[in-house]
Image 1 (cartoon, rainbow, N blue to C red):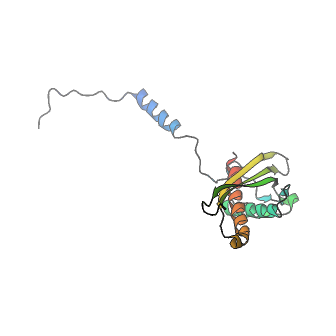
Image 2: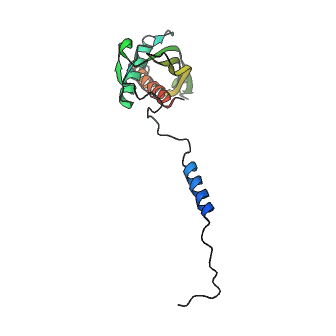
Image 3: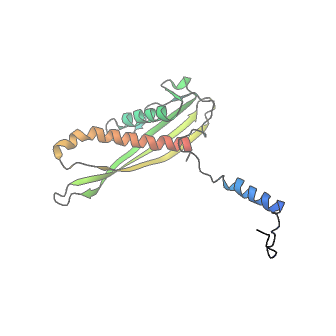
Amino acid sequence: MFPDPDFERTAPPRPWLSALLAMVLLFGSGCGYHVAGRAARLPETWKTIAIPALANRTSRYRIEQRLTDATIREFLARTSYRIIQDETAADAVLRGQVISIQASPVLFDPVSGQVTALVVTVTTSVRLVERETKRVVYQNDNFVFRDEYQVTTDVNSFFDEQSPALQRLARDFAARLVSGILENF
């Protein structure tokens, strides 16, 4: 095969074009997304966090205990912090209060008219403070958790289901709260 005399050679890429392409790739890769659940925004020097029981401003009996226990479990599962009770020995303290809890029906059984799904809304106020400096690291005075839960139409099993339903609610609440703290949204 002989070279085609009509074939035109293209000029090699200009150095400024290569530099521009490299800058676009470099700055374009920093899109602002990050891995969920990593504790990059919390100080690396912390080893312990105290999580006292949330205060309960509702009439719902012991809801604060369920939410506090679930939050402790979620911190233990997702971070390397030790969770302790003694606030004076902790690097940080997470305090909060349950302001309100409401359940609203969203679905009804067409035959019986009974509620089959509820939207549960829990409103809390939460603050994570570095103990020594008193610096507020995370604060949300209106942390609203809302999710939908199925309800059985069998009245007898409804009372049996209440405790597991509250456990699911507490677990879901804690997952969102800890994510909010770790991602600092």
